[in-house]
Length: 340
Image (cartoon, rainbow, N blue to C red; front, side, top):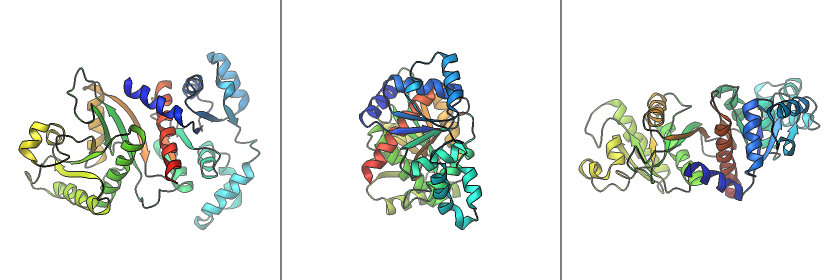
């Protein structure tokens, strides 16, 4: 809970405008009501104002009336957003009529609001798939300069009553756990760099990045091991300022005693707090083991690599999940603003 509370408190320092395309959804309304109560951010709900009003009354919510509401069908800026979308997508064959229709789609509208500067970030996914959330973001916001791969990380806070305090006092970034199924060398490097930015911008952490494997420093031979070594070396070439090592088994990455035996002299081994996994299968399994067996708190997936702060919820999310992911999104948005 200390991690979650600290994220919310940090978000308060630079209040961002975060748009919620699923503005009529009950869990979203409850999460936004809490965000308004605690003054974490300025929410923008996309939906029918009457539906939002009625549901808020039925749920006994006290603060929703403070939120800005944008009705997608009766939006006074609909044509302006449609023109923006047409300019962005006409080279792909989009017509003005198609752009006008898409400007009424809440997921496209949310990204158009960010692109035009009317919002700082977006949280969606309570009733939409990851693909539905990412697609408009890629078409409208695109990837950040120099980035070709979008990935998904999780912030992991280990339960200190169960797990020794590895990482940064039990705090980690795990990636990729949500988007890229079988990344190549270049994509693994992008995952590492984007995860380092998440560690810095959201957690204020000094990232120490381990490229994980079933081998440490050549203890096993396989093309999958070679991939992690090549990805680590390539990341060092393009981001020499980062602290990186690999390939490392998990025990060598986390435990200083094991690291001294398996990877002596490494500034990362035994102290890693950003774990880059070989593929989505490994990453997804790892974060769920940490969460379900290790009692860890897991926040995410946090989308990385987009030229804008857009994040995706699990469809099984709770109002508190929405609350904290919105706070993370606000921190990402504030960081992006500070970099411009």
